[in-house]
Image (spheres, rainbow, N blue to C red):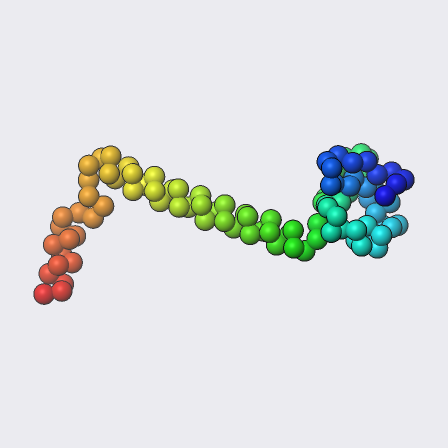
Length: 101
């Protein structure tokens, strides 16, 4: 793709927004080759990726959030263990055991 595009990464195409709007179908037909970064006044403003890459990126965000909360829970458990306190108080264990009697 020529005429105003520059390669910022090996598979990334940088395109001025005005050029993208004029030749949108051309860029969209080649989107599987890599992302298209839209620029305005030389500055990146958006990235167009194919749907599979978008879904993968969205999944990564969700997995990262899950991992974050797992780490938070593990840290809390570790703090309890370091404080040498049981995760459930003895009174709570006794109360629960009496519920089953």
